[in-house]
Amino acid sequence: MLRALKNLLPHRALRFGLRDDHAHGRLRDPRFVSFVAQGNRKTLNTDLRDAVLRGRVLVRRVLVAAAILGVAWIAIESAQALSVF
Image 1 (cartoon, helix red, strand yellow):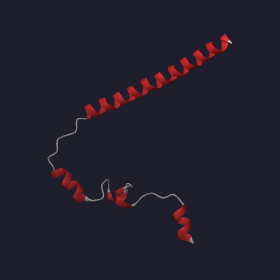
Image 2: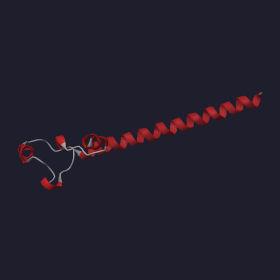
Image 3: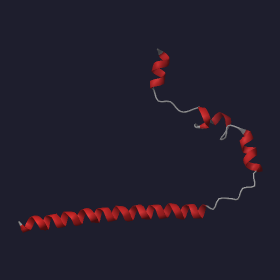
Image 4: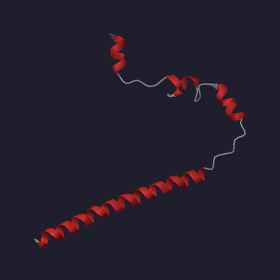
């Protein structure tokens, strides 16, 4: 019964390293750290990533502004059409 109640309560994911375990440091498996350190990967250009994120924010703002203008235009046209009658 206690296990059933415990399963209903929210709990943090412990498996697969989804939760930070401060007792073992930031990374759980030191083999992973050595694997990453040995790899000769190119560094990630964060400037490009930041530019992409800024572009997405700009596109989102333009779409929201266009939607607001579209709704306002429909409201104005509807008001003009109703004023004719």
